Figure 1 (cartoon, rainbow, N blue to C red):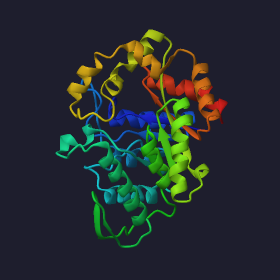
Figure 2: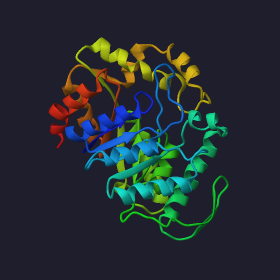
Figure 3: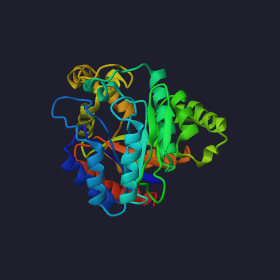
Length: 325
């Protein structure tokens, strides 16, 4: 099973995240994931660098670790053709080291730039059209696509990678998971293992069956939320920056980080420990990873809110990753 490191543009400056990526590669992480936002999930002391230029820099500053987004939403600000061109270019520059993930997004990525925040059914339609446009453009042909939300007019990509860049789809519900089954090389989710097995695996298989695909060929990836430190209370407090996520959810039209933070400050720290693995013991991380492996996940991407990211990366390299490699 592969193990990935999530680098959060919301919490750290891009230059700091380059250091985390370098350290992650040295520690033995297989992949580095990065967020792709215009606004963060918090206001105070937040950051929000641009993912695409950061990826090019981070790939150049490392030697072999694979990198990609988690996630890039094709809802308003990103035309699927631009996504296709960007990741084809990165794939040509860094063969075999690039992936990207599409999803239905959050309003913070669209509304601040003047785009609408459509209801979920329309966002799902945009996701489907984006998958179709991107995969068609990667054939190298001139593509004219007349969708309800996205269009191309005799568009062609003149630079393509020697090997296709993996297209992943992220989802936490059955309807988006079915889209992954139809189009994606990999599927990313955040839900707990029971819900994954009971609801999402059948949905992934349904989507694959619609287009006569073998669902076992779709890579299964789970995001694991971890805060590790020598002091438990400090590790729990370090999750506080991310309280806005459960406080407002992914679907609400709340694009202003100041409002998200205000809601998050009312969210109890104790409830964060229900979704985050807050621990002082690396063995707990190993146990969680083994549970994911037993559930059939091919990769676990770890989002760390640890008070000391370098200490977390070091303990991963010394004690956790060797248990799986």
